[in-house]
Every structure is written in structure tokens, then in C-alpha cells.
Image 1 (spheres, rainbow, N blue to C red):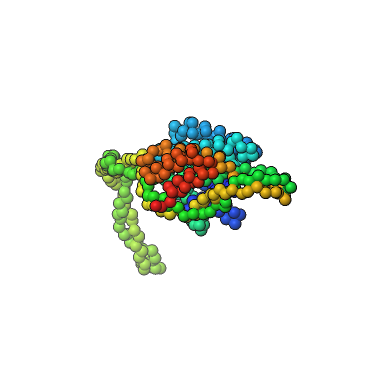
Image 2: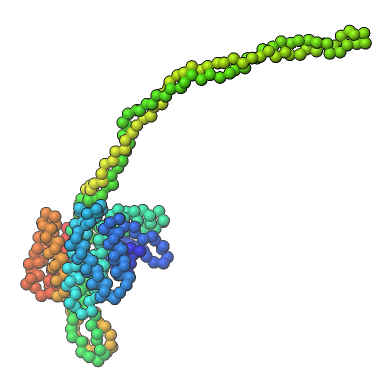
Length: 387
């Protein structure tokens, strides 16, 4: 079972569609492309199925870092080129975000969720596998279970940064009858309709083969003279008396055939003949990356994390865990992610978006964490929305 199913337990926001993994829908796993994607999917599955949350976070972190370091394998076919740009970016954003939370006590779940979101983006960059899975579930009558592959790199990256920032929180134990200091908390997130500008997407196109006519080849065969005996029918009728009366006179004559047939030798003359065959050669064009234009479109049901609000201190009348937001860490995740995406340059990011991100970074340096979060969120959402 691929990560794309197991992550539904982590409430991963699948863009533009819903993924159903409930018992009432027996859907097949995603068969990822051989090479990087299949190996990555297997690694994530194995990691998420055993050990403690801390073990899972540490393993995912190490595996992400190793793959960023090593890059695609030498025989890799699918996860190269523009696709690897996406993969490397999603892995890196996951690592940056998880690293911010690593020093926070009890952050194991946050780190697993952060790396899980990044892994989801990585696996949904396997466009061939996702397209095949969508065809399968459609043919099964589950068209509403369609899964969206990742789209434009900058948009997806900024959306991932925003998603990761939601996991900057900490569960704090509160004893009944004690004073609870004021703290920042996060309001409920919400679903939004966001806009993706048109862009070129690099898609792997398998090589095609066809048979090319080369010519006609002929073979000549000789047949020798063949002789055989043929029976020639010949003969004559001869009459004889078959019945005499008492006086010796013939009263009945019988005709009898006398065969004088004979055999004679006949011969078929020797001859030659040709057998001809059309000859074809199979010619194959190698696979290649082709750029296809994706029209600008709305993304329905994009998840936007809630905003920070301050809650004043109070006396607790019950014991239990209280979830508090961590503005400093959230601001750091947003800043690090924006810096990473902005490093693509204004031409790739887009002039207006790049300028907004740069302005948010500059102002955030002089602002308290909660204000920096607001500035960074605003800049990202501006890039993800239609102007």
C-alpha cells in the first residue's frame, strides 16, 4: 500500500480531489514507476509501519537527506530533469521544516507529519503512475476518487511551505487548579479556492516504434525432373458360348472383356520457381521529455492553515494537554521555505510574486514572530491567488 493511502490518516490536503481509503471502497494501491519512485514509496511504507514516532521522524529525515545528496540514480528514467527539480525541492522543504521543529520537546508527531506532507508531494510527482491509477479507478466506477499529480513547481512549493507551517505547535500539560499563562493558538483552518497560472509542464513521453520497409528478398528453388509409371487401359470384348442344347447347338452367348492394358513411363520436366518476402526493420525513437502547456485553473479545496490569535492566561479547572502555537518556529519555517523558493530567481518565481516574497522576508526580520508569520502567510497566499 503506497503512502498516498496511508497519508490520509495524516489528513494530507490532496489538491483538487479527494482520496478515499475507507473500507467501503476497495481501491488498488498506486503502482509507482520503477526506479526512484517505487523505491521511495517502499521506504516510506516500511518506515511508517514500525517503530516509535521519533524513530519514524529520524528515519525519514535521514532518507530524505540521503536522496537529496545522491540525486537520481544513473539508470533512472522517470525521476529526472524537471521532475527531479520538484522532488529535490519537496524533500528539501520537508527537511528544512522538520529541522526547525527538532529541538522542540514532544515534536515527533509534527516532524512525521511535516515529512509526510513532503513525501506526498514527491510521490504525486510521479505523473505516469498517478495517471494510470486515475484511469484504473475511473474504470472501476470510482471517478470521484481521482488524485491530482503535482503541478507547477513554484506554486506547489509555496503551498507545501504553508502546509508545513501548520505543524509548528506543542502540546503542553496543564494541571487543574493552576494558572495557565497566555499563549498563541491557531484558529481552525479552512478550505479555499486558489488559482494556478498557466505553465509548461515537462512530461515523459515513451519512445515509439514502427516497422520500416527495407525491400524484398527472393529465394530461387529448383525442382528436378520427376518420372512415374502410368497405367494405360486397353482391351477388347470376346464372345463365347456359355450354354448348349442337347444337340450341341449354342443357345446363349456371353461377352467377356479381355484386358490388354499396359504401363508406360511419363515424366514431368524439371523447373525453377521463386519465393519472395517483404523485409521490414523495426525503428524506435527514444523516450524524451516534452513540455505541454497547462492552462491556468482554479484549485478547489486547497487547505489553508488557521491564523494565530492570542489567548489570555486563565485558571485551569481541568487537567489535560493544551495545544499552543509556536510563532517563532512557524515564522522560521515560513522564512526558510520562502528563502528556498525565492532562490529560483524572479524569472522562475514571477516578478510580482518574487517581489512580495522578498518584501515579506525583509519586513519579517524586524518584526516579532507573530507579525512575521502574518507577513509571510500573506505573501504566500498572494502568490497562490489570482490577482
